[in-house]
Image 1 (cartoon, rainbow, N blue to C red):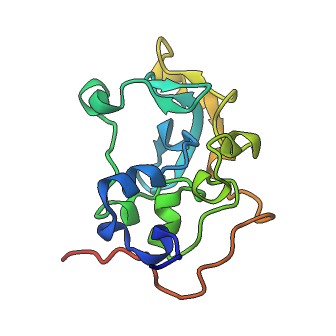
Image 2 (cartoon, rainbow, N blue to C red):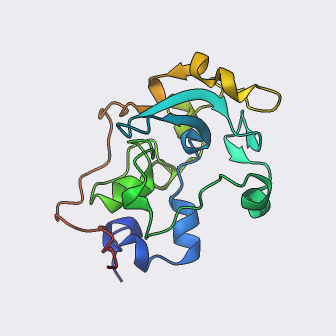
Length: 171
């Protein structure tokens, strides 16, 4: 039996549905409204959260129906993770796709789903809901923190083999 955790052994495309779902760290950063400059592609993060985000637990209040309720909700999959430039630098899907390890505060490393909040990585307590918020005012809510990489201190051991976890793009 291999003692190496699945995220170090498998590519995103090789994960089971259960492994895929548990890879999410629960930070809620992907559920923030973002603005994209059409000329440069630069992403500006806001502190305005999707109306379905529970702002305390950082979970979706209707995960199963989110895409029908929020038409611009993008479902992550092994084929699109590498091309979504707005994924936060701390996102487990992004990290595994890049062949990097998970942060120390990720529940699969720490064994506790609360460490993402305790480490100050989640959006908990830092957002407002888009419910009733006028979209034309999003520029007033631009913030930098969601796009910043968390501190490395306490980070889990590096996987040590380059290329593990990299998704192969289909042509």
